[in-house]
Amino acid sequence: MKTADELIQSYLSDLKSALKSADRATVQDALADAEEHLRSALETELNEGEGRAENEAIQAIIQKYGEPEEIAGAYAYPGFFGVYADPRAWGGLVYMLISIVTGTIYFSWAVTGLSTSLGVMILIIGIPVTILFLLSFRGIAFLEGRLVEALLGERMPRRASFTDSSLPWKERLKILLTGKATWLSWIYLILMLPIGIIYFTVMVTLISLALACIASPVAAYVFHLPFGSFSNGQVIWALPKYLTPLLAAAGVALATATMHLARWVGRIHGKFAKALLVSD
Amino acid sequence: MIDIQESHKKFRKELSAGTVSLALLAILAQAEEPLYGYQIGKQIGAGDDQGDPPGVLVKQGAIYPVLRSLESQGLLSSRREMSDSGPPRKFYQATPAGKEALQGWVQIWNETKTFVDNALGGEYQ
Image 1 (cartoon, rainbow over the protein chains, first blue to last red):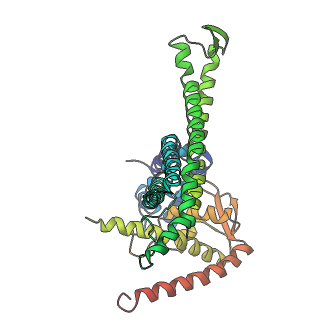
Image 2: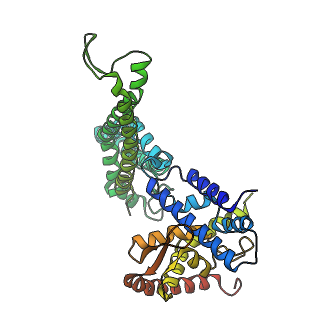
Image 3: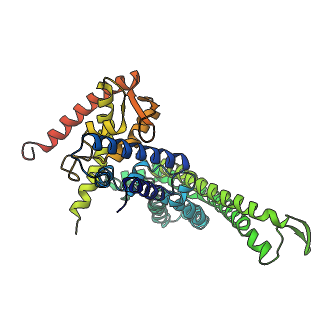
């Protein structure tokens, strides 16, 4: 049979492990609150209670206080390392990496579409070709909106917007041709190429740098490869072996900071996409 | 298949987010002396005996983070006091700003009540 004190200690250690992704200050607060509560409640119970045994009373008190997982959830503000559990950060990371592909496709389509349309304008088929391309810009913009919502969490339209079908077709055509939505979508598709290149380059650089730092102790101690700069197979400068664990720690910090960056960029990009792709 | 129990839990959690803050602020604004967490929990009847009777929105442990958050917003102030047994206790009291905020909150609460009552109509009351 466990004593009340042991039960409190084991509750606190369960709570601590349930809080493992929170920062240290939060863990300390949560443990202090729990201990204060359990001990205060126990004291009151023993003074006024119906003469229950100490360890029975504490079990009831813990029951009322809540399961460790529940309580940990109530305190859950993500800490620095909590970012790894945040789907927005991973979504941002994936979005930034694939944006070089989507950006290239968008840009090519937007440029091809507009120049083809302008080129065939003098022919009779010019009008339908132009209409089809303009509609495709709106369609791609809608699909990009779905991608943005899925990966970045920014709420985007769930239905493609159609012009009011009660209007005569000439009016509808005019809205398609001169409407803000069409051209803002086109601008977005064009801008996605430079933006995608920047996102991809920055992310790949940061990720590979972080991974290289993290792997440096293994490279140094297991494979005897120095971490430094090389020229024609000659080592010009190398980091002393014993410093590589330090470098690995810096790599972990860099990887975590990169996740924060991905989450932050994701949020900004979501707002940017909404500003250009959603018109009222 | 919809998990009714799960939907109750989710609804209760969503509903408790704001109402617990209101209840805690109201109790501390009316209290004659500073109170510590356990006393506050007893007063709002959080997690009463026999598990969770209907009407109880929170576990006692869940009020502590809310107290901290109200304190960080400047609506509550706290001081630590040693206790005869166990760790020091944190005593909370409402600040003047907290009392002022409460008046606005009560108004919002009354509006919310009317809004929900209107929606529920006669049949569900």
